[in-house]
Image (cartoon, rainbow, N blue to C red; front, side, top):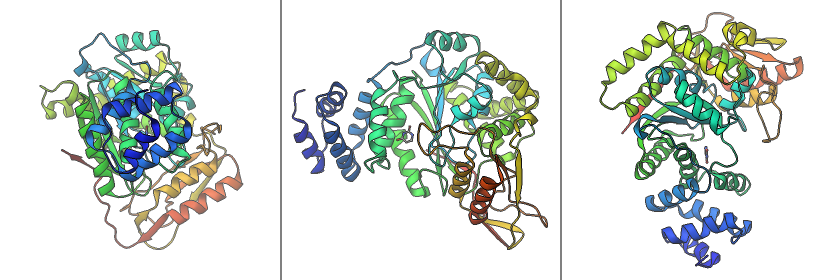
Length: 433
Ligand code: URA
């Protein structure tokens, strides 16, 4: 290590930009044991308070990417794409998008995460239906060749620096720093060896970014840094002031995806999934027209091609095909409780974060990374802002393991929903340049 760690911290503390060499000395030095945890804690706080310019964020992203294994493919890089969503309540689009995009011939080595706190994780949803998410390199390569892609968990060899930094950010009040978020998200996507990335940045009560302004800022930095690291990027902002779709909770969300893939799902999940899938295909095949891609994707939902592809991926990864084909069997929590509210015929607002907390109270989420979850609990028949309710119609049905947790969840849901006479449902999603 060339520079003294405390001198590098001092420069960032005083608001100066760090050079590529200083960043590499400090962050590589941390992995090699030359920088102590307390020094990294101080650096993370200095970055949170002082920020980073585009060059520093790109340098940090690349140092993180290079801290572990990178996937490499015998395919043109442009053809290999993925998407990242910043997450929210009922956000289950990955399971619909993967088969759709593979039907078009793009390649997708999708690395997904677990749920922590009030938002769910794709890996937990897949494990609810027996899907193996930790694949060997040989399995990944074989599935990329035979089906075009897979959904997998990140192994400990991929971006190990992110794992260590994320654990420290969690306990040093530095999770919210935009350059640190950008480095964390993009380093993992770059390690997949992709050429194109679609970003679904969510805003609203149940999202990481509460306001559209914050979501725009995150999207803009993700796009700028991603492009400077050689990725083609498309950014969509989407609304998390309503739950996405009608189902939230692990197995229940898989059931909704099965509905969508059979052409019978709720329109919000269907439309957002189709949109993000179309943008991924467009990045992989830039000479095709947008209209041709969109029509083709809709056809895959209508004629069962996407559903059959989904079942093939499930089979390759050990998923329970019987449970997926007969997906009504996924509704197996013993207690069902309807939440019926008064106050008007229209849903005027939803605090979606409270819905996430209700799922946590049911045992469907984690407070600690080590917590075990109950895959069957959750919520169905969820209503969006602007929904018109008939007399006695519930805003949600709670699926619980017992009466006590059902009651706690129902109370949280009652507090989350406001009813009245008129509402502004907002826009489901918009693209940003
Ligand atoms: N997702 C990540 O992977 N990292 C962050 O820092 C935030 C969201």
